[in-house]
Structures are given as structure tokens and as C-alpha cells.
Amino acid sequence: MDSFNDNNTIDFNKLKGFVNQNNEINKLSNKEKKKNKRSKNKILIFTSIFVFLLGIIFIGSFFYFSFKEQIKIKDVEIIDYDEKTKIASLKIILNDTLFNNKRYCLMNEKTIVENNNCILTTTTDVKEVEIGNSFMKNNIYITDYINEALVFELPSKIYLAKGDTYKINIVAESFSDSKVSYEMNSDIIEILDDFTIKGLKDGRDKLKIKYLNEEKEIDVVVSSLIVKEPNHFNYKKKYLTCNRYSKEEADLLDEILEFRINEAGYETRAGVVAAARFLSLEFPYRIDYFFENGRVSDTGIHYADGEGRYYHKGLYLNSSKFSTITVSYAGPAIWGCPLMNYEDAGIWKSNTLMPNGLDCSGFVTWTLINGGFDIGDIGAGETPEPNQLTDQGERVLVTDELINSGRVKVGDLINWWGHIGIIIGIDDKQTYYVAESLDTYYGLVVKEYKKEEMPDSWTYIMLMEDVYKNDGNLTNMWY
Picture 1 (tube, rainbow, N blue to C red):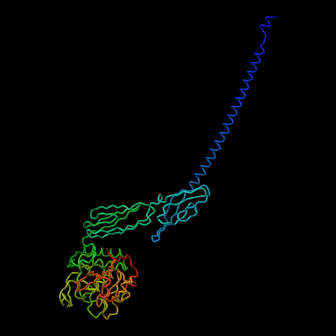
Picture 2 (cartoon, rainbow, N blue to C red):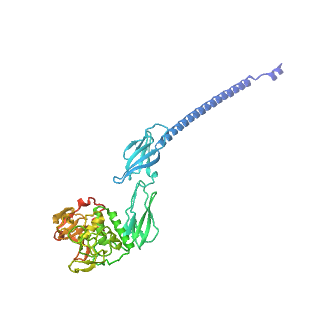
């Protein structure tokens, strides 16, 4: 009995401890389960939030980039450009849009976009456009889309004397900041700073000028047939001799003369002045004075054309000009070639041969004809005929008041008894440069008169505003 109890007795204390231990384990297990469950719930929540935020970001990005695409430019087109006002009309073409969102373009004024484009007017110094909608805006340089010139102008030809220079006036306008470049093929010219070219030797060259996507050519002619216009008339230059020029040379000189007139403005005041300046300054020889042998008009004296007066277009340097002469008395003869003279004055003896040239009214009518104003074969004024050079424009007495009035302009005619000239320059000191053909000076000269000398030297000035009507590219001086 005692042994049974010793070997089989249950230790309730140990059993109780085991149960308690097991309960503790179960409690810990339940806590761990709850903890794991809470962790899973947190992960699920965080995952849901992340997915939600990712969705928000995705949707937001979609709308952001969609609206951003709305304020981008697809292309820019130049519709029109006014050279006088320097204002261009532009068509701004925007990207297509998925949403009917109100957009605008802004340069000088805000314009609402319609059909994915807007029309703007602006000057070339404004190169940025603002594109916006309800949510955002974007500043875009239109120069990234425009690569064409609004204006690209330059002379088609240039004529230079050897050693002379000419600054090319290149008119190039665009929204781009691109510079003008050039390319030449020969060594007859050199390019100095600021597109000034210098003639080195006789010849022709084609000068290529490039601007953006455009290229133009200038024909450059360098010729010793002309001289650089001096600041003052060269009284030492030689007189033109008979048959000095071949037909090819005479044709080239006619070409240069016509170009100078057209450059100044044919049928303008400046065109007439250009003709007078060319013959008196740029042409390398002096033209003799020759008393007229008669006129084409009915004056009661001989009928004659091209004998001292009333020459037609161009320079009378080759016999090919005879085809333009309508009636001859003692001629025909080109400038510098002998022609029978019938006057007795100074070196001119009656019935002697003298070099053909120009009398005073012959020179003035020649400048008018070549400038685009053929007023007929008329004289200097102090004769009975009703139509004279002094009847052109507004005839005004030369007084100090007139000279100081500012009314007198280059290109006006100027007269004293039986003589006429043309004003071809007025400098900053109010010195008047008058081109005139005088027997006392043996031909064509450019005389200079200080303004205080004018009333004592001349009688009338013919203000030619109503005759010329347009000044053209007039300059007060040639240098």
C-alpha cells in the first residue's frame, strides 16, 4: 500500500504548473495571431492607400500632361507682313486636345484659340508667345518654328569704279536672329566690314548673299570706265575725245547710267539728279560746250537734233546713237567729235569745226529726259517762245529769304538771263552745288555757291515740286 502510493502518486503541483504553462503558451499564440492579423490589416490598408494614391497620381498625371499638351505649339505660319508698319500676322497652330478647354494665345493682345489656332499681329522684335488654358501657361519662342524671311531685299547689280567702295544696303527682316552670310567666286572685289565691297580690278562677279533659307545673287561690275565721285568737281580732268569708246564700252556706260537713275528712282526728282551727277562727276571726261545749231521744235531757226542740245536717252558716245536722232543740220556727231559751229564767241569761230557737246539748256533737258521727264526741245528762258525751262515748276526770285526758307531742294532748276543749271547738292554749310554747261568754262562743270552768294549770282529758282511730284531716293549730297 505504501509502495503504491510512493510510485503512483500524481504531483498536482507539477500538473498545475504544466497547465499554467500551456495556458501561457496559448495566450502567447493568440496574441501572436492577433498581432499577425493586425500586421496583415495594416499591410492591406497601406496597400490600398498606395494603390489609391497611385491611381490618383496616374489620373492626375494623365490630366496634367493632357492639359500641358494643350499649351504646346504644333506650327507657326506667317500669313502677312507689312514692310511699312513692320507688323506681321501669324497663325499659331496648337496641339490637338482631348478636352474642350478654353485656351488663349498672348503676345501683344490675348486671343482665344478657335479650331486649334489663333491669329496674332506683332512686330519682329517680339519673339515669344504665351499659350495658356484654365490651369497653366507656357512661354514659347516662335523662332523655333519660323525659318523664313519676311523681307530679304538687296540690289540686283552693283557698279563700281576701281578702288571705289559701296555699302550694300541689305534689308533682311524675320523673327529669327540669323545673320546674313556671303559667298563670292573671284578676286575682282573684296568684302570689308558691314558688307561694304571694294572694287579691285575690272571684271564681273556674282556675289551670293544668304539669309535663313533664302539665297540671292548680286551682279557686281567693276569698271575703269567710271570714277569715284569726287567731293568737288575735278577741273583738271581731260575733255572727251572723238570716238573714245567702242560700242561695247558705250553700252556699258549707258547701262551704268540707267542703273544709277533707276536706283535713285526713275520719274522722280532723285532720278533727274542722278543723271546730272553721273555725267558731271562719275563720268571720267569733261563734256565740251557747244552752241546749239538749231532745235527740233519750231523756233524759226534750223531744225536740228543732237547738235549741242536735245539729246535723247543715254550717253552720245558711239555712232550707234545716230539712230535716235530725228533731224540733222550739220551733224550727226557724237560727243567729242567735230561738228560745224556757226557762233562767233571766244574760242568758237563761225564755220569752224568744234567738238560736239552740250549747251546749258541742252544739258538740263538731257538730265530731265533721262530722269523720266521729256519736256521737249526748249531753251533757257529769255526768248520769245512761250514754253521755256523757266516756265517749269514755280519760278521764284532768288532772295536771302528764299534761300533761308528751306523751300529750295536738290533738283530745282536755277537761272540767270539766257542761262540755266540744276542744283545737284546742298551741303550742311548751305553751299549750293550747281551743274551747268558754260561757254566761259568751256563745258560742263559743277560750281559751288555759298548761300550768301546765291542772290547776286542767280535770278530765278524753279521750284520743281509740281513737276517731279515724287522725290524718290533723294540725297542732298552724293558723298
